[in-house]
Length: 130
Image (cartoon, rainbow, N blue to C red; front, side, top):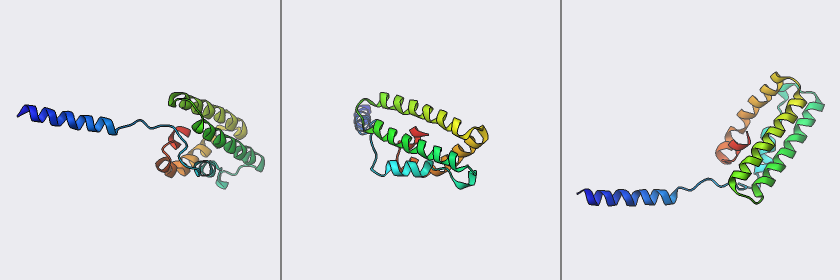
């Protein structure tokens, strides 16, 4: 009785282990960059000046372009994640200088988390970006 159960457990385990694969970092779709830029766009509710808004939008476009370049580039997943995290830190520094105050930056980040939530389901990679 125990032998057939052991065989069955082994077969089920083997089947499950073969079907589970790690998430590869690759470009999810051509719309990813456009969707990311639209999600990162500062809302009018923040009351930003046109100079700050322009600087933030410029950085967001550059950030999205760099992320797409990293994802479509060569290298293993660990190096891609490292590059994405480094670019994320660089973006945070640029945004910190652009916003000037921590309260405005925190409001912007809170707003972005709401806007990017649907993309976390659509593009699994979006969670790495924030």
